[in-house]
Image 1 (spheres, chains in turn brown, orange):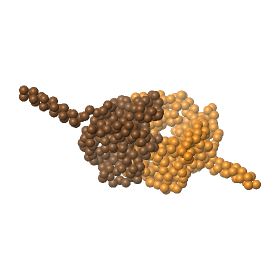
Image 2 (spheres, each protein chain N blue to C red):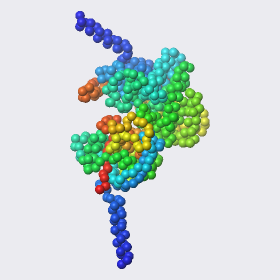
Image 3 (tube, helix red, strand yellow):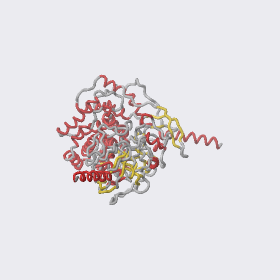
Image 4 (cartoon, rainbow over the protein chains, first blue to last red):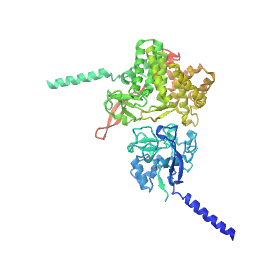
Length: 231
Length: 406
């Protein structure tokens, strides 16, 4: 009898603990728990400083960048060639934001994006600290998640390094404590993350930031990865 | 009366423009012409049609879509033909000792100085410039888009975001000019330019930074950041050349720091991606070839030379079977022979050299943005660059790989 009670208590404890800390993600998303992580870098560009401890609430984030086919469900006028139906969609910030809203999601903040990419331990890339061309989608002829090594981030995301750049919801602003002046700081440029295939290795580091006019993407392939709040 | 005066003025202004800018040279060689004649005629085309105040345009679009001045055309890679023609005239001068050849080289070198001056920042070199007060239509059409109005040279616009391959163009072109062509005055200026340009990269922890202080898209040589093996080679070559030319110990110290502390000598060995085969990149080979050509002639340490030779051998594994469909691929063969002293000039390779060609003039339709936001399709003639072919020729002549009678 006593053993049975203990087993029942253990079962409910399990359900309560895991039910609360790892909620079932919506289809195509992964779960990122609340808590601290290491953000920024001392070795990158001046705008990545200072390296700091940042915090997020728990959230879900898309496992892959949004594809052309997925985006076309939101905007049937969106044109792409048939062989690129599973490639990441390349869109302006407004298009990305509208898609996220339509999908019942939103664009990630810089903090959310960086934590989903590099986890909590301050690693350089989603998979660790070393680089090889086989870890990333080499060109835009390839589709999402098709790098040779297929590395996942610690939370299970693909292509957070390379593929296409990804929009965040944030304006390009200095981090608290950053003292390097940049005339681009303010509410003119949005931040994109993750680099694309057409970049040197440093641009696909998870802490790297780049600014871009929200509606002017002709020089950069920028796509979408959405987040969703945990209810 | 008024009408006739107007017509005369119109005709005179047309002649005036033509005389000032010299566009276009319209005489092309025939494919059957001997090599020296082809080179001479393409040289005239380049100097006549591609000359942008001494800098060389990689591709020129003629009127009506283009303008006589400023020149219209993609400008991201202008430092490549500029450095190629600088090297070409340096090799040519070393053979002819003709002051006219030296003067052309001097003017091209001064254009590279202007590429620095136009940015207004000591040691920051632009990809290209154009004499204009207003943005030109091609700035938003062709990659890159990082155009700035010059604050240091009013009436000029310049293109930023310099990359590792243009970094290589600068130390290769200026280094060759210093070595073979420059008089004492220009040697001092060349050393000063490399000191400022490479010195700025060293001071920024081996990063090419742009006007905004951020690293450029392809400007990463930093030991604290992951970067391509090719970039390690390029940085070592740049430091070797700059130390050789300036005599400043800081460049020798930086060279050995990157080797002793960060193993750049080992890292650079794998500059060439050999497998999978579809990842082999002939464009990257060009930057490696220029870097190896410079560093292997200056390096005297046998153990380091062995490592650079390993790098060269990995390239040769691919080059030995390469088809000559890229203007610089035949140059790889010549560089290999110069660096190794192996006689690898087969009849087929000699024939490829004799068959070198510059470009065809083509007609293309351009979607030119209009002031009202619409686009207008305009057909224009355009032509590419023959600078690599001309450089190949004088390089081959200088090293005795090309016969003057060919």
